[in-house]
Image (cartoon, rainbow, N blue to C red):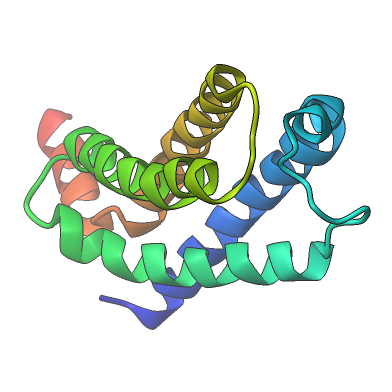
Length: 145
């Protein structure tokens, strides 16, 4: 496992996740989230969100090669997206619904489930690209020619 790939993977996660999160929660659906009662601050602390995503990126990028070892690129990315996406969903979506007076819950679950699915599909794809075994890919291409 390469430290450089871990950092590049974390940066890739940050580049896809932070703009998606900001746009999804604070632009496209901000009115809906406020109506649901999700925001308890008038102004979210953007720096904390950025730091959270950066830390998630480092952890997920470090875990990715350990988690998908021995699997094809597509299979590994799909399994990682499913497992980490479901884990994140339980922590972010389900637990938030338990702690905050969010109503209606059906809207909350639909919006956040869609968001997490998009987030982890994109993130797993980028992490798979960053962490792919370049030697094996070059070898398979050479074998086909």
